[in-house]
Image (tube, rainbow, N blue to C red; front, side, top):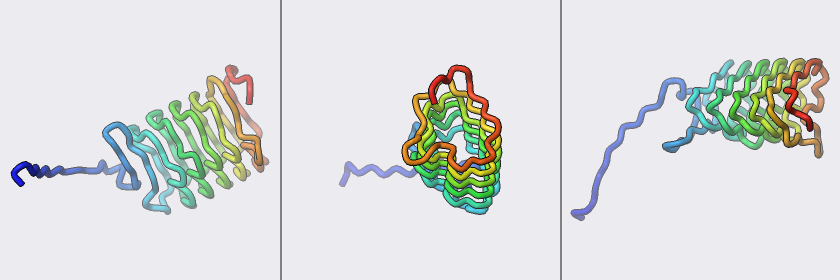
Length: 171
């Protein structure tokens, strides 16, 4: 019909996003999966706004991850589950919650920095992180941690140093 309009669009993906499967809108960009499960590091681009649950699950070669301040949400469940080579994690200042089993069984994780906006950490978020020795949590407040069926730091037998902001009065 005469009223049909045909539009052609050319989309391009920034090179640093070639590592990921993702979904996006005009306002958001969410990483849904890591394409190369043998990648050893991931620096999330600063325009990514969220990381879905299971996105990095089972990436056994991943050694470090930096989550920038642009990320406001880390998937509710098992985002970095069993990333057995992961040693270092830095979570930016815009993430507000770390979900259930987010870093479960990341047995080589030694250093963890949690940004100031994280107010809640879900059940078993770091369970089985047996090498975790240092936790730096720059929180301005904490509304709760998941004790329930399993503590947040269960089986973190080497956790020796915990630095938490003076503003946190309830954990």
